[in-house]
Structures are given as structure tokens and as C-alpha cells.
Image (tube, rainbow over all chains, first blue to last red; front, side):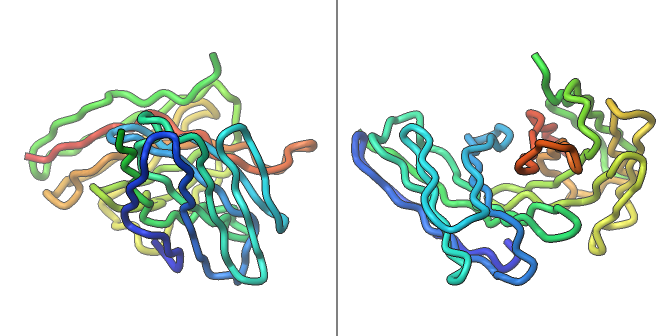
Length: 110
Length: 117
């Protein structure tokens, strides 16, 4: 992805907690999205952060630090169905384009 | 249910044979996007329509064209598909500039997987 970095792969255990980090270029920043994408399917919206801090939504939470160009997605009480690719996407200024990272492939093991 | 629909879900074409992918939406969103996603890569924006205004990405090949005849429909035309154009093509929509909209979430269709033989 264009100036967006996230780990390529992660493995975690069912029932555990996992944190997926994302760093991005701060210039022209206008919001940070997290999407979930199962293999062969379209991305689905998980969260949006535009202000610093933590946004909690059920088992998923997302954090943003604008000064550091850093976000993370926190998944709690992992389930097997959470095995998917998690895409960090930066909202790109005046054109409102989404610029995606290459995604983090999460494998949840029993 | 309001949604983004893409047809077909799977498309096979021959090298050099023009192909058209379609997208429709019942969300009444004013912006529609086409992305190309290759295996294990990020979705790459090809172009988008803001209402009727077409916005092409600088690195989108001329081989790719788009049409938006009305609010609901948008088409991706690949004039002469090459083997490198085999990918998942994702259509997305968003509502921009509306009062009370806090953020411009993009809603994705299920995608069309294109195979080029």
C-alpha cells in the first residue's frame, strides 16, 4: 500500500486478544478506516477513527494517534470466523480517496 | 435491503477480447468507485465518479474505461484484457457532502473475479 504499513501475517489462538498495528503517512490525513476481508469476498467496514483515542465496538476496538501516524485494531475473544485479512485504509484528503494497506492476514487457531 | 450489486461474480474472457463488468447500487450514493485487487495485494483505486464527474487515477492504464449512465449504475470496460489484468474488481459507493454524515464509509460490492485466458 501507498505509505501505509501493517504486518503481513499474524497468528493467534481462539479466545485470545490480538492487536494489529498500522502506520501511515500523516500529510493530508482525513480519517483512518479498518476493513475486514475474507478470502474471495469484498471488504466490510469495521471502524473509523478521525480523532485521537479508542473507539470500541463490541469485540473490536480501534485506536488512533494522529501525531504518530499510528493506529491499531484490537480483536478480543477471538473466534475462528475472525480468520481474515484486515485492511488499514487512510482517507486521503480533499479527494476523499481511500488508500489501502496491503492487509494483515490473521489466522485464528484452535 | 440496500446494497451494492456486481455482475457477474465470475467472468472469463480471452486475451484481447473486450469485457464489461457492471455495478449497481440501491443506496442512492453519489460517489461510485472501481478498485482492482490482485491476490495478496491492497485494493487499488482505478477511478471514481463524483456524481457525473469522472476522476481517473494517474496510473490507471488507458485500457480501462468507465461509464456511469445514471446514479445507480456504473460500468468498467476493459478494452483489450491482458494476462496481467486478471484480478478481483471491486465496486464501492459512498455518500459525500451530505448533511449529518459523519464519515464517508465506502460500501463494497461482492466483487467480480476476472480470469483472462
